[in-house]
Length: 381
Ligand SMILES: Cc1ncc(C[n+]2csc(CCOP(=O)(O)OP(=O)(O)O)c2C)c(N)n1
Ligand SMILES: [Mg+2]
Image (tube, rainbow, N blue to C red; front, side):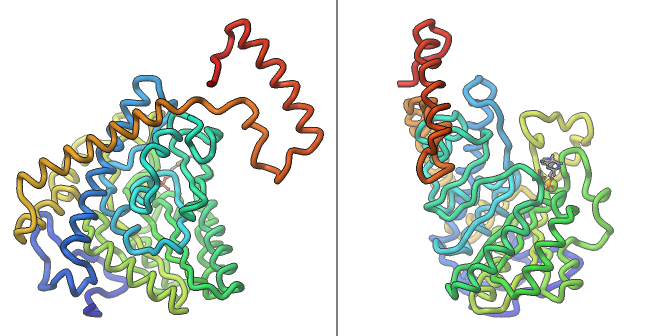
């Protein structure tokens, strides 16, 4: 891999592909450590996330899921950053990172089962919809308080140091979370204990209705790394090659004992904050259109692939069809998964169910049977 493709603390975002899909300087994929197949895979996941969002919205609007959070517009930031980690690494998400889960191989049917609170969900429907997590993939379950995952990442990094393993932690958060005290607490601990943590801020320009300029001074968030004595990189997060390169550099550095890095991925949230939000009340639609027109991650990646002769109309058509089929099949499987039984409310907190909980559980199950008999609750099997 060629080194020195980018520098820390730039005032303009690090960018490899321009808005027309052309390289901004001379490089080859090999310089970045990727193959054409890798880039096609990254592109596949980006399209998968975009269509996953459409399906998530449809499930919510049709009453099958109670809540949804779109990642639309942030596909490159999520997919290309996740691509830089290894399976043994820890992922600590905020609330909008499903592109990251998909890259790590979170089964699609389990993703949808979570949204619809079905038995197949690894957390058995006990979390808010769109709050995924899967132990086997070393993805922590999302907890809603903004920024609380940042000190947790430092803590996991400290545990890795104690255990002397070569795992790395990737922690994701938004521009809004970067204004929380937890951001500074997490960074400070991570630096003082020289932890293998990569801090990834997806700056999507908005924290619900609060714009970026109301949160931070003019300097990029990445420049705050200076105050902690570590490197900070300001990156075009809608450019998968720039994103992958910088995150891979930080992951390798962390694995080799070089400590934490702060990365700001500049991106944009196309949709509402969540299905409980209406951005028309605070955001100019024209701003959204400019991002879509100039900086759309999917459009730019496709143009780059095509201009290099690695992609064409036919491949594009097949890809969207494949994605559509995979998503529809997964939804069908998830919908066929029953709702979890009421007893699952009591499981997985203690290694066994203590007597006092057992009593409560028996009481609930009795009551449940009666309610089923009266037709007040749906039978779950
Ligand atoms: C401590 C706390 N305060 C407020 C909220 C409500 N809330 C949820 S997400 C959010 C904005 C987060 O913005 P950002 O970190 O930029 O992430 P984004 O939603 O843009 O991805 C807020 C204020 C919360 N969940 N927790
Ligand atoms: Mg934000």
